[in-house]
Image (cartoon, rainbow, N blue to C red; front, top):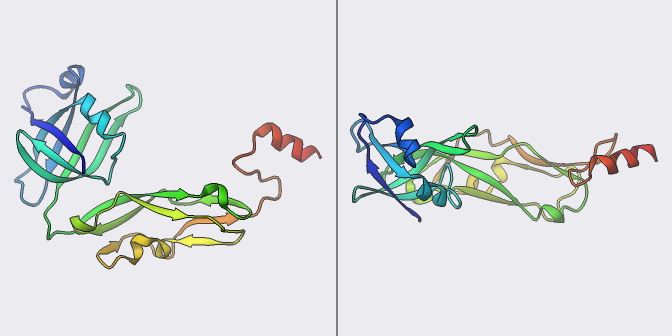
Length: 199
């Protein structure tokens, strides 16, 4: 688990000014925290953390020497400025289930037997105790063929008795569809597609 250092921030200083000075602002909240704790973190440290962690990841948050086992709840990215403006954290309590999301990661994309993958979901919503939290769920698609479908209930996370899935268990995560009627696999360029159609 990665550690991120933060400092309590004074609300007298505007967030805009802190961002100019190289900080990312945020809040820490949780069952055992009254209200929330406004914090600031060095942008360089946040950028480093987000290379490996993201929304739904568990991190150790060090706020002025006090550590919190925390979940990254929200990451507010500013696309115009190309930077993260704010991050919210939930301080975890071992005996309390929390709501989180896990990214769906498809592996062996190139080993689908035939057809093209159609991905319907990018993440899954669930509740779990801190000990059962994950930030990604891998789906191995090797050997899948046209007509094969993977639903939420088929995911490894859905089979974990310590996890409550909040999405519909019958919802389709991905399916393999045939390539026809001018439909083009994602790996084919538009130029190649035109050539195919004029054959």
